[in-house]
Amino acid sequence: METKKATEAATKKIPVFINGRAFESTARRWGPVYNPATGQETHRVPLGGAEDVASAVAAARAAFPAWRATSLARRTAIMFQIRQQLADHQEDLARTVTREHGKVLADAMGEVARGLENVEFACGIPQLLKGEYTEQASTDVDVYSIRQPLGVVAGVTPFNFPAMVPLWMLSNAIAAGNTFVLKPSEKDPSASVLLATLLSEAGLPPGVFNVVHGDREAVEALAAHPDVSAVSVVGSTPVARAIRRAAVAADKRVQALGGAKNHLVVLADADVEAAADGAVSAAFGSAGERCMAVSVVVAVDDIADALVAAIVARTRALRIGDGLDPASDMGPLVTREHRDRVAGYIEAGRRDGAAVVVDGREAPACEGPGFFLGATLLDHVTPSMACYRDEIFGPVLCVVRVHTLDDALALVNDSPWGNGVALYTRDGGAARRFQFEVLCGMVGINVPIPVPVGYHSFGGWKASLFGDTHIYGPDGVNFYTRRKVVTSRWPRAAADGVDLRFPGSE
Ligand code: NAD
Picture 1 (spheres, protein in one colour):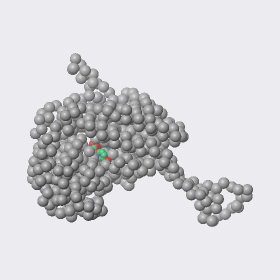
Picture 2: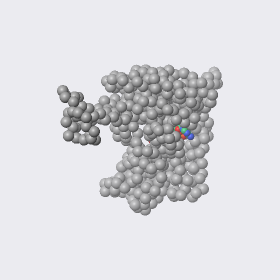
Picture 3: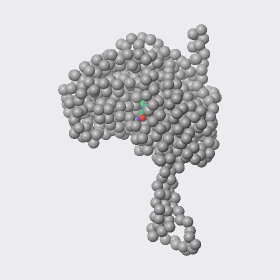
Picture 4: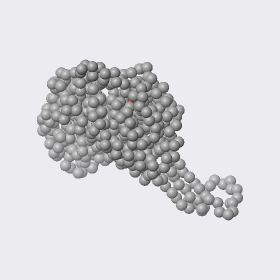
């Protein structure tokens, strides 16, 4: 009976969602989707190319004129309904995320909650689209700026936040009057189909939000499609960079967020217990598969030994298991290949001379069929080691020991990445200097994961972001709208006569 059920599940095909309907893709290529906690293939995902993309873009294009013309009052009312619908189904979404991504349910619930913040922000879109008005800029002439939607916009999202990152994009995009085509990660695509279904049930008209699946082929088709006006991409640095290039070459507006390697600096005066709590939570939450995960602790001066001891105690106490088991602190990695790649960095660290203080490969869960790897701590890491240089994106925390705040700042500022950074200290002056000098897009002072709230914008510096636009919040509204400036005069009784001079202010 169990085997029969498993076989049925294995043949389940993930649908595309186009024009308000979920249906089977005609794609020739299909790929596996796993439950990483069991190692079982649970679904097949279409790796559709240009055909699915063409029908999704056509649906979005057809839906755009009516959606754009829908009153702000009505669009806002629908955003409120979407907010309620997602809140009512928060746990369904979270369970869907856990089943395909592996993160523990509490973490997945948090992901959906952070995504909801973006919907809540977009419920205030009338305030953000108000524009500016200058009366009597010239005699009897008024000038006003308005913001209008772009048309069909596309999003390409990573595996690690299958609900939140799509919500980063789609909330402002559709509230502003655009129509949207999402290409989620092929590793955990079910959450986006559920999102599309919930949006549709909340009253979003057909064609306003569409989901296609696939890999490079689908993304390239989206980036090149002449009816797509803008592309948002969140992913690893090489992929974000390549998609940005392709979309810019096709004259599109692009928002591109890349990978990361985030430091947590602990000064000698810091509260060791609080810093260790922050480091372990930020390093091993979601098994380190977060772009804002802390992957390097920089221990300054003589705090290092006490700090490492406090981190080790907490790391050893972590319970590794199925994310749907409430007893688990940390779930598996997303695929077997990714787990093996991350484990390879533990071995490389050992070979390069780092001390493997806690070795996640020894966790009992690693013996099962799931894609588990325990939390790992590497001490005495130096900047030349691969485990320091590369984005590992797994539960491996490196400790680099330095002498001074200057050394710590130099280390962080020399890093090619610049997504997030955190500082633990009780010294306000040191914190102020750190904030002033550090070359990084998001800074936490005694806060380990400084993801901005939905009414600010999210984005890194250096190799963590391409172009100048951050994502969601005010930057998101600007990205998904373009400015139009109107200069108007309503004639009084007499015309003014022809005047060939360049118009000025009189
Ligand atoms: P990825 O780069 O492998 O994939 C991202 C998306 O691009 C997916 O939808 C994927 O299907 C598509 N893609 C993959 N290869 C492609 C190619 N050659 N051409 C075109 N499209 C391609 O990233 P991932 O492994 O899914 O996600 C993890 C990465 O995302 C990490 O590097 C992480 O730091 C980064 N990330 C960054 C942020 C941020 O805000 N800066 C947030 C989340 C994740």
